[in-house]
Image: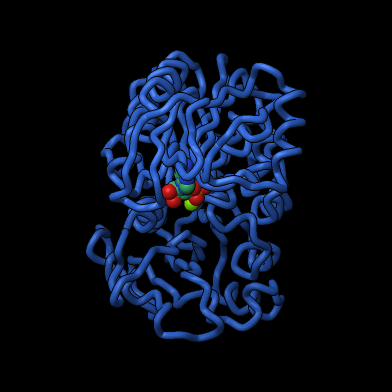
Length: 379
Ligand code: ADP
Ligand code: MG
């Protein structure tokens, strides 16, 4: 049985359609600092307009406590108007175009999934299109409540995310390799546990790998460590012997700074007072070759402190290998996605996920409430 309908299952011509997009973009001085999510959301909205729907779009932005002008969606509507091929208006209906509503978090009861708030959003609408993958792990009025009132379908962006990430859980082409990095093991432990039985290899870099090394009894100097995770990680390494691959060398620094003294050392050469801030060249080359030979790869989390030039090579090597791979390649996580976009290689991978937390929850095997609610409209 299909779990949800999509916009292709409905004749939207003449319908008033409310779309939940993910327009949660960073603002700087009242301007959109990164329009990636607007660009991603726009094709769905334009397509609905082209098919004859009257389109209203809503989204949250940031975490305001009630109405706060610093979190208005007005600049988002402004940027969308520059990018769109149809008219865009803010908080006022526009004929044959897209109406952008004010921040859903300004509504009392949004985050509590209050039924009255949901009813207000649904008022005057005929159909709800859920296209905000980054928000479906939250049961809010604009993600769940409104979908209990209006007939609801998945938008193309959500559908693509669920299909791409779903492949990583069910029946991935093999060899199936997962590359994990980023700062903390604790953020990603549930994903690690759910993916380990499914993968052929899990390559671990970033700040999190030092907790793994510590569990092996290695000296890690002043590298990032989560003491309370050492035991769990040790148990996982025992249970999935051979699947977890750790770095064999590192770029270490004498302090946590862009201009710190740095050098390359082997895994057994991390001295007291030094910290690993990137995987070393040998590891970068071996991770890259495993990635290139895989039939499916999922990558989450940079291999080092890629924000600083000197500790960027490992992340760059993995990104380039992803781009060169012939297989199915998916990237999740805000920082990893930013890293591949900064290299201009996002077009060369199969899928770059827009949702951080939602992607992780899906890969943890958890039900996403904003997707589950769509099921009731099937049949
Ligand atoms: P994503 O957003 O892709 O899921 P995370 O948020 O988990 O990634 O992690 C990204 C952060 O991890 C970056 O800010 C990066 O600087 C940091 N990081 C990566 N490697 C290290 C390291 N060796 N030591 C400290 N921080 C690291
Ligand atoms: Mg992050």
